[in-house]
Amino acid sequence: METLIVLAAVALLIALGTRLIHRLNAQHDARIAAHHYGEPFPATSRPPGYSRHTPAAQPSRRRLTGTWP
Image (tube, rainbow, N blue to C red; front, top):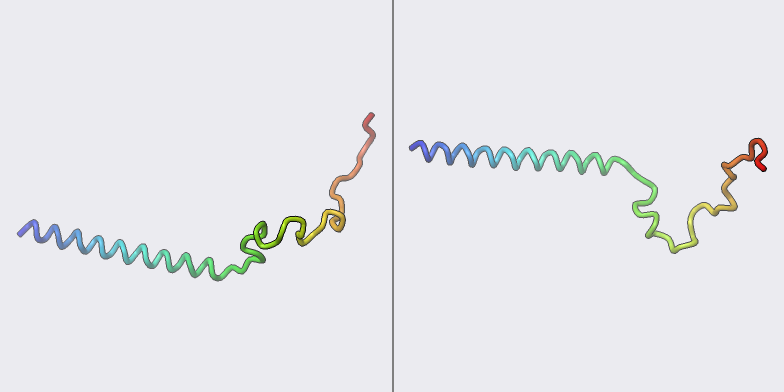
């Protein structure tokens, strides 16, 4: 009789655990679906050399400060 109760308890815990994991996965999927990013794979969506911003179009972030021999 004790073995039957233990088996029922184990089966119940397994069922509850799988239900919890399923709900957490659904919640995670909903969070991911809420965020819309620009490009999922920017490196593979364009051929090499066809990026959105060309280096000439971007302003230079480096400034010459001071003098260096």
